[in-house]
Image 1: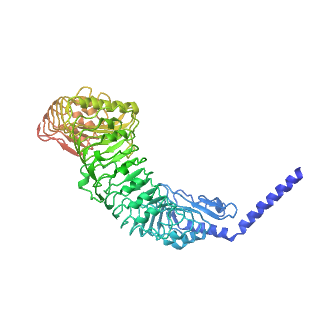
Image 2: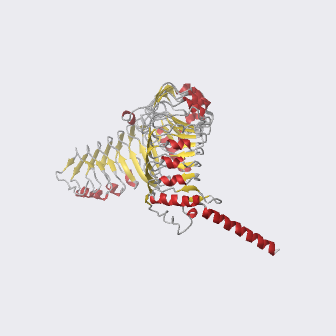
Image 3: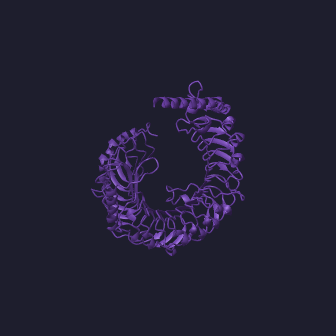
Length: 627
């Protein structure tokens, strides 16, 4: 039995040796190695030294980092060198890349390559299936040869500096499934090859270019398209009704263009649609959508007319409808059966009127609702379950009635800012206290705090510019999370004094901001010194009296304090110099007296100081250390 086995092993060894010899004698294999070395010679920066092992004397080129070869022929079939932010490769592309004629995958994303794509070289890669140069500094035109690569399936050239038109025939390529040309400088129109076949295409991303003209009606031929992102261009005319023929469409973003006309009812035939984005302003985002002043300083683009078709709102899978500043109008109460799959609904800064429909309460997954800056009237339906919202903004309307309480819903949402500013809500004396306590209780029990850019956790209750009356609510922000918290109650009709337990517990809070300005609050200011993480405290234009508490100097995180326009008296503590992070101190318009402490000059971060309209002695400190 051992003899046949020995013969078999000998035969297999011979076959392996023969294959190795064939590969070694294959001139195409040598050409691949030479092409790779030429590619390396054009690299001007390699911070991580990933190409340092690209030496024939060290190892076979099929073992070089980023290189994959066919195990039979020895030809290079894959070149993938994805960079990192800290150590990207830099250089230009060698024209000899075209000699890698068996290459299937070429990925050089997230590097710092520059210059133009060598058209002739890429045109020779007839077997190329994946071509990814995203996140580099390439410029010039996208070569027409790319549209002629017969096997190309994935093309990603996003986040470069390409200009000129999209190559003719690219959209309509028989095998292309994924095209991302976003964040470039491409111009002209969107051309779909009328003789081509785009049924394989499922992702088309052309965001943030300079594309003009209209959205082509032939887009309806791309029947398997799942994501169509055309936002942030200069496209004109209307949304084509032919989009309704794309049964698989899940994401449609046409925001930040110059589109007009009505939203086509045919979009309601896209039964798989999950996200529809129609925003009309450059720079619009979740973060800025609640700013009333933004609309007066940013140029408007999309100008749709009419309402959103009820057929669109009834789509069974629609989770995101983002259409602030889209020139839409009509009555929300007339909209038939809003989609109960909705999670995010932003119709802020439009022309909707009437009342907020009770039917929105049936959207049990709704966690983000922005109806700000419309002409809505009436009260807020209890069925909405605002206490479960991650974001709720109905500011700048004509709403009235009591601020809603608990709807009895079980909350599973992430808790984020609640905006009710400029809502003109009418409350009885005690409802604010009860409602606010309910919000904090839910927040504590579920730890549902979301993240904002920069990694900080934030909770913001903006109840400013209403007609709230009564006393301040009991405030307890202990959450067991390191977060930033803000309570804005300014410009209301609140009265009484600051309760001793107003800031009973700030434990676990990383930053704190309270604005009580422009109310009718009175008494002494004493409770804030218990909150050592206070960063901003504003209580201007009230009726506070007494002295500024000396232990305010314990608030070492404080950066902004405004107590102007009250009746505060007494002198300033010389311990204020400990507040080295303070940038703004506004104490004007009070009855303060005595000397201005010299220690104020030690507040090295101080930028704004107002001590006017008081009764100071004439001497003033030196501020040589202040900015």
